[in-house]
Structures are given as structure tokens and as C-alpha cells.
Length: 204
Ligand code: NI
View (tube, rainbow, N blue to C red):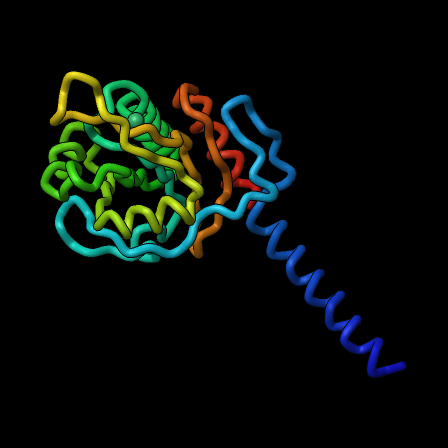
């Protein structure tokens, strides 16, 4: 009898432990705004090593060492990305005024064109604190997979040299150790997202 009960007891303790981690990393008490997705059951994020716009290799642990907003896109994007990245850096500025430091991170889904040099120009145009990352096709495929980001190349008719990338456009609020704290839809104003980020971080 004892031999059967003991593993069951260990199982219960393990479940309680998992629940404690769950509550600590997924603030379930935070009310969702229209900009937020429910991430209760989402397994998103994981370790990566990519090349920063400065050319140096960076690990996810070195980059996500505090609250971090992560967005996947590409610098040649004609419509969605420029808007979303602008919202992301505006959000970071609004939070900075409140004394909340959040790092904005841009990961390209178009590493063929978005070289470190190209990303360096992008950072200069967008925000001095922006961390822009590229890598090999395999590295980008791998990090996109851990964030459940979908992307594919779309050739533009009558233009052999040019192509677009279809891609998922969400902004992820990550905390160290690869924890997803919140996920935002695109096309929402920066002040909304900043207030959501503040609420989520306060609930962690
Ligand atoms: Ni885009």
C-alpha cells in the first residue's frame, strides 16, 4: 500500500510546485485588454543565440535580462512591421518615463536581406535602445519555431529580384528564463500596450 501511495504523494507535491511556478510567471489576475491575447496555455519562447546588429553574437539570456518586448518582422516590410515596431519603441519610451525599463527586440524573419549592417541602419532609424537580431536561415527558423512564429516568402509578380515575407505579427512580453508574460496583437496604440505591460509586470 505504502509503495503505491508514495509515488502518488510525490506526484501531488510536484503538481503543487508546478502550479506555484505557473502563478508566478503567468499573472492570471490580470484582466485582458483588447490588445492582449490569453496566454494561459501558451508555450512560447526558448533559448537562442543570434547575431546582433552590432555584429556580435548574443544569447537570449544576455538579451532578455529584464522585461523585454520581442517582435518578429523584417526591415523591408512595406506595411505592418514599421507600424508595429514604432508602437513597440513608443511603448518602451512611455514606460521609461514611468521608470520602467523594457528592452525592445526585433528579430528578422528575412535574414537573407537583413544582415547585421542592414539592421544597424534600422536601429539608427527606429530607436537607440532597439536590439535587432539576425542569423542563419536555420537559426531564424529555430527561434521562430520556439515563439510559434509563422513566416514564408512571397514572390511579387513582375519583379524577380523582390519578394515579401508573410509573417505572424505579435509582440511578446518576455521575462528572464524564457517566460512569456503577455502577448499583444498588432494595430493597438502604444499607450494601451504600455499600461498593459505595467499591469502585467506589477502582477508578476
Ligand atoms: Ni511585416
